[in-house]
Image (cartoon, rainbow, N blue to C red; front, side):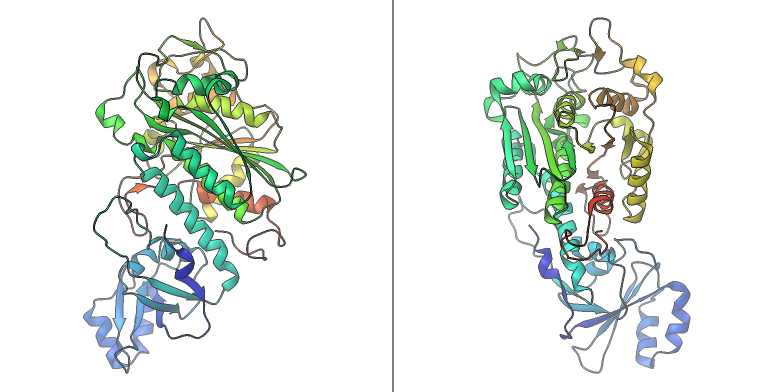
Length: 474
């Protein structure tokens, strides 16, 4: 794990290379005020002031050089990531304060998933000095949570089975003195029958389980965070083609988001009673795999006809959402790499957001905008419940024809959420297909910052957040 805390430190006047951000509209006026050696350097480098452009300015001594970088003037957290990649190791400070969120890109530009690389390729350590030390802990925590999502999703299923996922949650629980319950075997079959059915074809070492973490004062408002933990999805007997199976190690991306969000809540000491739920399964193929046409029992008592074994994520989430609702939380959030239909509609960068409460949806959208982590609300269009009708059971897990796939999946989940509890569902991709500065190709946190900002805005308080102030939690 990248040591982000060593990359963002208080500015106490220690030696450092200065960085000045210049916007294109400011460039000519700025250049006119500079000494000749600076003007020559800027001209020679063909510096434009556009984001991503960088020029090194010589000083009076060899080690007194400084940096000028292009900027669009926004508070986009990634505007510094390209700059970091152009800098050698060393200490740096900005001439003027930059938005707090921008330091996230600085930190994450140092993160790389290298677990399986035999040859070392260390990343140069560019240490940023900040005049806002009260915000360091919050930013380091957010970078670490983002890196956790990326690392968990990037880990192949051979090393990220249900037991491995449970071990990850156990480590987090131990760190924050949270209680942990893992339900398996006969107890799982009785208490979470759909989780057991989806995971029963896996080999014993990869047996399904329900992972639950509890933390915080029981007198505080209760919140539930649920994450889909399908560690690999073959599609079951409705087997996926090779192209569809290639990225299915990321099908536990919802669990990664949920665990990372829970970690942020606990690190910030938010005054809540946190309930994290992760149904961890492998959707495998064997003689006892659940079949198209089967009817499954559920924890809620609804019978579910299986129209497609590749629509398994909603099944395990159904049992988890039922369990979450039994303790009457004030809020339920769930994360899942649930449907390809959401990606067709919104592409890889934009999670689909479904919510049964308009105020909750509006607040999450606003939080996403504020943190450059946008989400897009999709409708829980009630008439489409007809697509989930079954001739022999209470509900079918997959609508015929594939129309409105993300909507019908969310409507299925809604059947397992108490109607009087505000609930939001993030259908997130958890993957970046193309590398960008600070965001390598691979696992990605999409919707995490939006959800965290919402929770901090709602429950955060000066005496309970991790910095002791009401600073920006981005």
